[in-house]
Image (cartoon, rainbow, N blue to C red):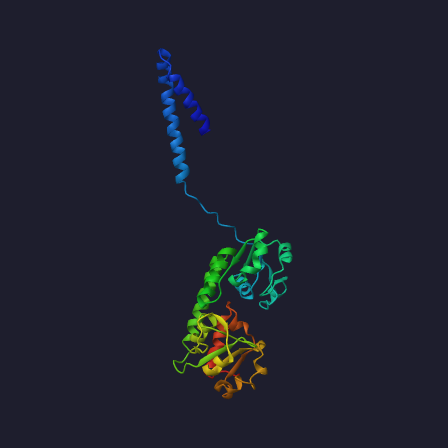
Length: 310
């Protein structure tokens, strides 16, 4: 339309170059039209430049694939369990989630199976980004949600609340969790503060660093992380463990720790000799950054301050 108008103005101006009375009549007729048209063009251009761009908020997801057990627990805890259609093979809680199709592990995803579920959202953690390349190339929506730190736990709940249309439920859950945490922390004695080594694996030794959510739970329970490393999770050498000499050892029952306690360097550790090796029956309550973390915190408080059994 603008190009057509401009062409009309050019033709009119050419006619204006002809002398005589006809020129004056054309001038009287065309020039007001030209001025009006140019003003209209300027107004339209300004409107296009200044119109606010409104980002469309996607509708709440109704068919969600969760690549992490912790995110699955979060989804069910905020009332979005009915929106979950696929989970990780390591999902073991809640019971309803274990009946859903398993489409991923920590190291792989079954893209074909996921596609057949027709998801409108796939959620995982940043370290799973390399696994999701095929899913994104297929045009599927994938969100990665950090879960390393204690505050990440609450940020995850908030983000999932937004993605699923469950914002009030996510906020209410976060408030309940923080209230329960504060209640538990008030029961912790100020001293001693046992140096605690978390064993996630023994061959090789794998543990947590100060950047992890588990180390934060140890601090809340009145202990100190004994690994001395800053990264959330890392391998640990036998020599470093012997030098660390932790006061207590916390281990996952699947870590294989019962098979190594009689061998070096474990048999030279004060914590082993003093019988302060505590094995989690359900490691998920401590190791999984989800809505059951207060159960893990209560367990830690009891063990680190000699209020519970091995």
